[in-house]
Amino acid sequence: MAHDPHNLTDEMNAFLRDSHLASLTVMRSDGTPHVTPVGFTWDPDTATARIITWAGAKKVRLLAEAGGGRAALCQVDGGRWVTLEGDAIVTADPEQCADAVTRYGQRYSPAKDRGSDRRAIIIEVDSVLGRA
Image 1 (cartoon, helix red, strand yellow):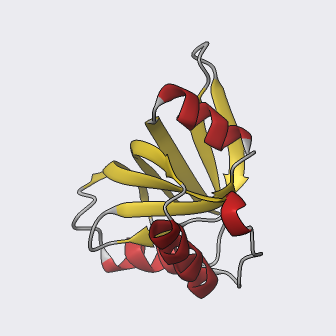
Image 2 (tube, rainbow, N blue to C red):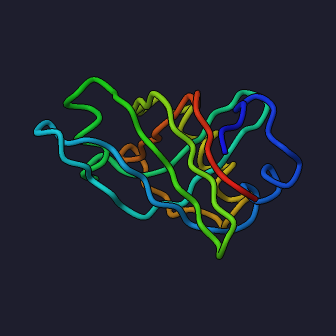
């Protein structure tokens, strides 16, 4: 079922706050998908998903080489699932990375210090599918 990313149900927003991992899918230059497990956070006010990572991660390299691109996050727990899709960018901006790390710590646990190696993937979500 399709949902407006700026107006998700209370149940869906609660599910996106629960401590679950998700699969992140980004595309390789040859058009094949790269899928990897990630922790992420969801901001319902801005319909933005954030993933913390580091400079050498394959997902970072793929998005950086392409100058950004489409990405999908899929979180599943039994019959409950949500897929968030949108345009993704990678940033090394210290303020954006610090914000992503803080949000990650609130949802999961404090993140390792990556110093200047820290990167954040920011997804501006424009499509949501799921059932929670």
